[in-house]
Structures are given as C-alpha cells and as structure tokens.
Image 1 (cartoon, rainbow, N blue to C red):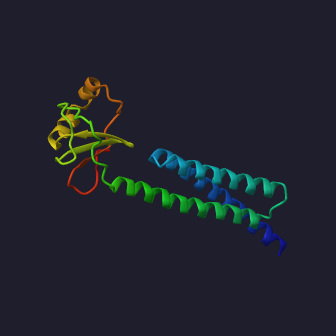
Image 2 (image 1 turned 45 degrees about the vertical axis):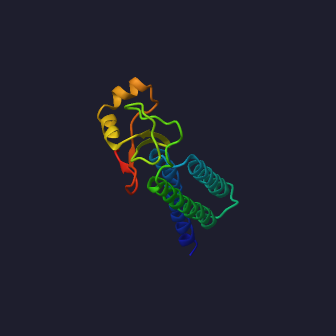
Image 3 (image 1 turned 120 degrees about the vertical axis):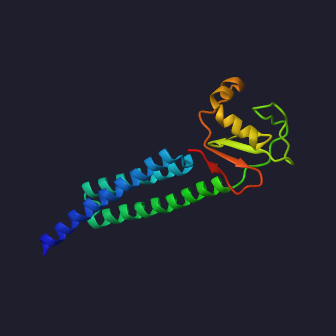
Length: 174
C-alpha cells in the first residue's frame, strides 16, 4: 500500500513538471505571437511563482507530492485562462477598425491630406498606423515598400495588415 502512494506521488511530480513546462511554453508563445506584454509578464510571474512554490515546497518537505501537483494544476489553469483572454483581446484588436485619420495625416505616396470622409486605406505594423488617401496608393506603396520606406524615412520593418474603409476587418499580409 505504501509503495502505491510513493509511486503515485512520483507520477504526480512528473505531471507537475509537465504542467510547468506547458506554462513556460505559453510564455514563449506569447512572446513569439506578439501578445500584449502585460499578459506575457503576468503569465511569466505566475509560472515562476508556481514553479518555485511547487519545487521548493516539495524538496523542503513542506508540500506533499499531491499538494505540489495541485499548485501546478492551479497555475496551469490560471495560465490557460490568461491565454484565452489574451488571444481573445488580440483577436478583437485585429478585427476592430482603425480610428479615422488624425487631422494633418498625409498619404506617404502622394503627400496629400487624408480626410475621414473619403475612401482611405490604412496599413499597420504592430500598433503603428499609416494612412493613405486611396486604396490604389496603398497598393502602390505595398509594391514599392522599400523605396517609400527610404524616401519617407519610415520606421516600419514590414506591413502586417491593411484596412480599406468600408470593408470588414483587417486583411493580413503576413
């Protein structure tokens, strides 16, 4: 009977370490997918805290294998909840149309002012927006991106998405 409890404890400790690896993997996924830093840091903090409590509690004989597993399971489900919220927030941000062009914004192709009442287009890299006075100018810009980037001294590495006024959502280029 005692051997079964020890074996079950060891199995739970192994599963606890797997849950910790998943939580750490989620932090890496957040970094590579460009999830908001607040979610990345919260997830990293909860993961590291859970790992420290679980491992040092078990090694210091403060926690049983069952309690150590319970701590890691709690951290695992908390990380899952944060991941769900973070990816839903990111999804909503990608669907939401951009704000109208700010007063004084100019088209990087022709230099004319972009007006909110015309059919403008928007290019995006991360949260940085670039407004165009027409969709034709957006497509000209995309075809000659490196030239316009140098000519207009833009701090864009690449255009990730674009939005055409009157259409539904952003179109991804990545």
